[in-house]
Image 1: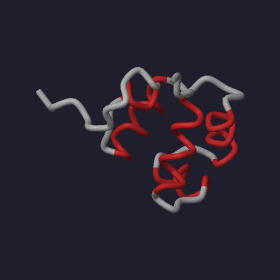
Image 2: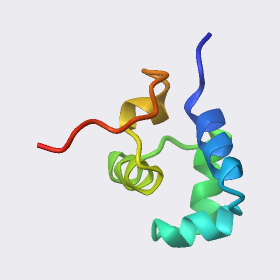
Image 3: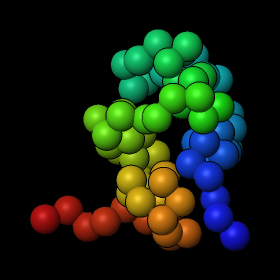
Image 4: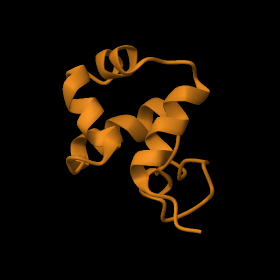
Length: 76
């Protein structure tokens, strides 16, 4: 089953009982921008993907649906 990134972003946010506004403030973007990413209307820039991965303590690959393992990669 292919997990689309925007579904994973929404699920992660909802699992933490966050609004789009709360999350967007936490990663320093506008709520409107985040809404576009979560709906799949705009591509998420690499910098924002990294911020989201750091915020959720996961990997960018997990956010992109390239792995089903939510654990982050070990720090070097």
